[in-house]
Image 1 (cartoon, rainbow, N blue to C red):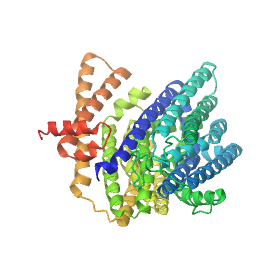
Image 2: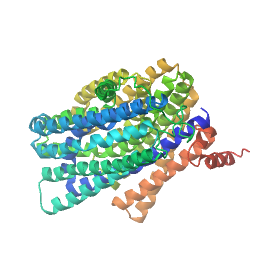
Image 3: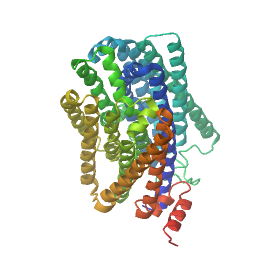
Image 4: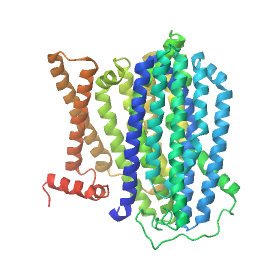
Length: 561
């Protein structure tokens, strides 16, 4: 891939990726006080009801923005400004209607859902979190609009703002309700209200960007549409201006709603990997634990312990999703222009980078599961489950990027089918493993299910693009880098553990120091291996913000001119 062609994509991906890391780090911090202040019971209740919200919200936060993004990019490629406006109007109407219906349905059906879960403690929290579905759709639609123009900043600022407000409100309500001696379900309901507050903040941010866009358009200043050249890059081109043209969809917002739904519904199904597997867990694990002798609230506590590793893995998933979201418009435009070579190269680079990311994260977290668990949650309960959950990062990351690439090429049904296979496998493995291994069995079932879905997606992508894997570059190098990273982290963990034991320092402070040492050693080993194995080429490195200096440093370290 030429640097000039890919630099815009990679710069936008870097912005979204950085925002994803920051927002998910904030989200991870949210889970820590939730468990530390409320306990594993509140944590279990909250994660149980949140799985229903996450399942429904995928349509308005992922599928609909992806459809809007795709069609905005196509309208831009055809210089159809009127079509761009119609796509946004249709997306806002469809999203707001869907959000209202889902919020009303979740509120009304809360008693039924609570019965399915098998815990009466989830009723009030289910209704508390349902109202967030009213404010999320317009925020997500505007994100899709700007992403279709390959503008990453609005989404990045909105993501971070949403998480900051969400966590702030959650912590305030946790402290207030806990001090008042509220029940676990009331505390969990208060925590769930943070999602509404965060969604409202994210919407306000997007409206600010939208107002600025409208002012610029009225004043004849660059708006973003005018800066996107036909090649699909992000380089400003003042000579290129979009002119109104006939809308190929007939100019009707109603027709556009239908068009968006045709694309968004399969994408919704294909994007349900993590939420659907979480829903499978919600509907099976607590009941199976109760069948094994645990009481209602005790089962919720065990389910909370099982979910300790989820926020950490979600950090990797969030980064992968953000990077993959930016791929959709570029892949869709390349397909519309018949640039098959560009699609194949983009797919190869994306798969290799994100497979490397997921595999390395999985290995590092698996060897540091013990100290990370104590550092974040104060005890080592569920460490085996956390270790198996960590391995989900490898298959989950690969599945996310392969699904995004398939969707960008128009093959939206394949990821949906692979999802159903993965969910069915997760259900079967839960039934087999949870009675034998407890919550660790559910975590192992998740890791296997993610990997199966990912492999199916990669095989389909290879068939459609003619992609041929280079065994050394695609498999051996990532495995080598992940192995070296995990080995360095494990060695640092053993060394630090020994020193801290001799010094008589343990508990959360000791776990923090051990985790920090392991992560630092792993990052250093990963960076060194990345430079010397050339797993990322100098051209790809140069495409990143400040990448020219990084590429020069890499050549210097390799003693190359």
